[in-house]
Length: 177
Image (tube, rainbow, N blue to C red; front, side, top):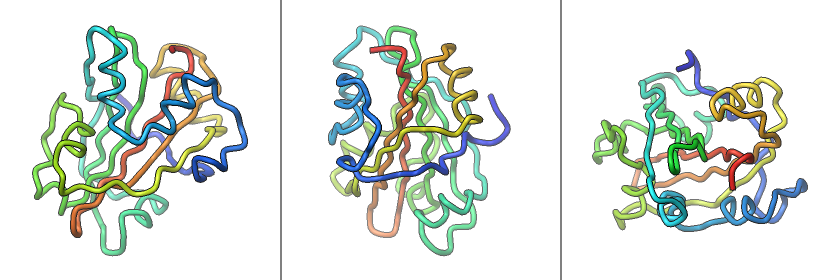
C-alpha cells in the first residue's frame, strides 16, 4: 500500500504515564494485557486480517535499538485488523530472523498475536503507549482508516523467545468503538 512503513518514532511511555486522555473504551484496549485479537473477536461477528505489506527490510534506527544489536534486516509486517469489515487497528510488527526461524514468517492473513499468545515459549515485555502527534503519521492513518478520526493512540510491546524478538505496535482507529 505504501512504500515505507508508517513511522513509529513517537514519544512512548508507560501505561500510567500517558498524559493525554483516551476515551474509556479505547483506554481499555490500550492497556489490555491479553491478546488484542481475542478481544476484538469477542466484540464483532466477523474478524479479518488484511495484509498491507510484508517485506524484509532494514529497520529504522529507533526500531533496531529495540530489536537489539546485530539486527540488519527484519521482516516488517503491516496489517489492518477488521471487525465487521471496518478497520479498527493498524498493526506493524518487526520480526527478527530468529523469530522467523521459529515459524513466524509467512503467517499470511492469520493474526500474528494469536500465535504469540498461544505458544507458551513467547513472553511479552512491558506495554508502552503513546498519543500520536506526528502530522504525517496522522495523515497516513486517516487514509488507512478512511476517516479523519484523530487523535490516534498506539501501544507496543516486545515479545521474546530466547534470542528471538518480535516488536508489535498497534494503532487504534479512534472513530470506531
